[in-house]
Length: 212
Image (cartoon, rainbow, N blue to C red; front, side, top):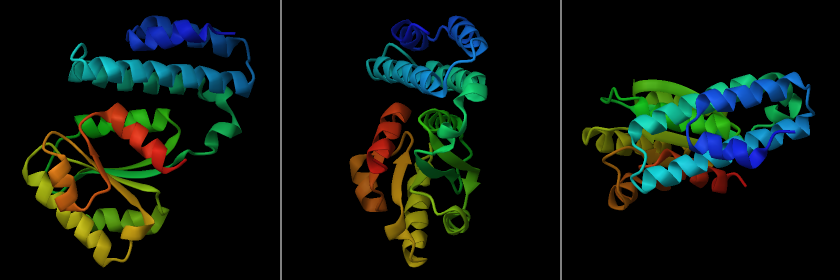
């Protein structure tokens, strides 16, 4: 069995070569699904370390991007042994960068971390109008809507989107989290979202709290 503590530390240190080497060796032993889930949990704990170090200013945005890619590669490596249990999604998230904003780095980090945490994520992409969110809510009935934006004008687009979701009669069926540089507690209240974050790891924790 994998040294879970060491694996968590390796993820936290962003030592991708070591992480993938450990995971490849683990998969080669044809492990049980239960053991594989423990390994996933260890990787997720490593991501929490990454999030903490980012909050302390020891890691930067580039490190978060790399961490998201590392985690995606780790989960892909483990997929053959994760089996059917892993298909029991932790919940579902419809995610997109709002209209008028073309940035996707933060959104993509959040997406990778949500998927690693077991969520099913429907990524609408960038510059998405309110109608795109509404259509996807009707189609997949998600637990959570995630709206991302880097530009200040994104706040207005987020409010327009939340208002449109309300008008469509769908607001009570979803939790809404907004993320990106311009979001604040005050903006969150004005937009009508349930939560805000500028930290992907924190955002995932909030989402996990909603679907418990």
